[in-house]
Structures are given as structure tokens and as C-alpha cells.
Length: 312
Image (cartoon, rainbow, N blue to C red; front, side, top):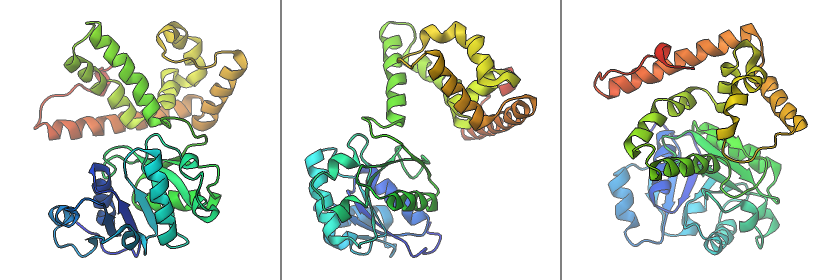
């Protein structure tokens, strides 16, 4: 249901699963939405999805869709040549202050912008959602080497207006951050199932009732802080962490200087000591119980384990 017009307009380029989800999100938050896609049944798709809502329309062309846009969110095929062509057309037709974002999960803004005019390249960045964007808050924001700082700031502001959680990624690299983390866990999960260690259903149950639940309420490094008690991550790595390091995937730097920089960064972020520990623990427990209660209600009252009974 629309919450009333905000005066903002988004152009959705590509009416696939991601594009339509972006459109539903924007409509929910009162944005005007123009959708473009070369498919011949676009008008029927938009009508079936949004009915006669006047805030959402199927545009007659790419230029028509982007002409009044504050934000262009491109969701075309994951092919560099196609994206380069699309953004050349978008840049020529969109307003001079429009943010030009791609939902790409692997192609960087720098690659797309290689042959674009400077003013277009300055407004181009990656705004990568976690699927589906209408439900998943994360948007990874990756500026390219030619992206203007103001573009990044305005893109973050737009995504926050849509009640998303934008995170600016400091370096362009394949897979960005969320998919690299997902890939590492997925590789290990496939290995464990292939080796007969656990069934697919049981592996999913393990994730849902441990890491998935934990990470829905606190982050990995915040969990490290809590795992170390009042001594925080420094105590964890000196004790428990030293016993489990052998199963860590990947190759993080382990030299003393690198580890000290990591520990210091975590301590600067979350703090240490009894008061910090008690505050973070109370927040974790409160949020975990809230998630468990919501899941139990959604399951029709089926029993769920109590956080108090679960190991840290």
C-alpha cells in the first residue's frame, strides 16, 4: 500500500524478479515508479503486479522511463557490454542530477564507466541489493574510480529513504562482500553434504538455529566481542579462538601486526569491559527472543528452543 507521494521518482530498468521487487519497495514508500523493459508484455506485467495504481507505470521506452528520475536502478542481464550500452543511453536521457545505479552482483561501476562521458561516469555506482530488495535491508554501495563523492552520499540517502541499510564498500572486488561471505559458507556446506557428514535438511536446520539466528541479531565481530566476555575479542582469540582456528576457511593475515589492527578496530567499534559486555548481551538476548517469538508465531505456535538454553 502506498504511503503517499514523497515527490521522488525511480526508474526501474529491467522488469525481472529484482526489478519488480525494487518497484514494490519504492511504491510502498511513496515514490513514483517508471518501469522499462524491452519485453513486449511489459504493460501486462505491470498491470498484473500493481493494478491501476497511478504511481506506477510501464514506460514506453528507456528514455521515457528515466526522463524524470531521481534514481535509476538498472537490473538488466549480468553482461558487461549490455550494461555499458544501457548506461550510455541512460546517461543521455536522465536528468543531470539523477543517481545512476546498477543492481549488478559482480560487475563494477569502473568497468561499466570505461567509455562513458565524465558527467555520466561521475553519477554511476553499484547499488547491489540482497534478494529480494523489498524484504532484505542490505544495499552494497560501490562507487567506481570515476564516481563523484557526492553521488555516493546521495545514493546512500536515497536508499535510507527507502528504509534500506546501505553500506559503502571501500574497494571494488569480484563478488563484493555479501556474496563472498555467502560463497564461503556455501562451499563448505556443499562439501559437508557431499561427504555424507550431514543431510541437506539437517544442514539448513543447523544454520537456521545457530549462525542464521545469531547473525540476524548481531554481527560476526559483535559476536566475537560477546564470545570473549568482558575481555572481548582479544580474550576470545587468546582462548577459545586459538582452539578453533584450524577450521577457519580462507587465508586472513595472522601476523601479530595485522591481528592487532583487527582487534583494535573491533574494540574501537564495540568497546570492552563489563559495562559494554552487559549492554551488548542484553541487546542480543532481547533481539534473539524477539526473532524466536516471531518465528514461533509464524509457525502456528510450534515450539522453539529458548536462547537461554542455547550455547554461546
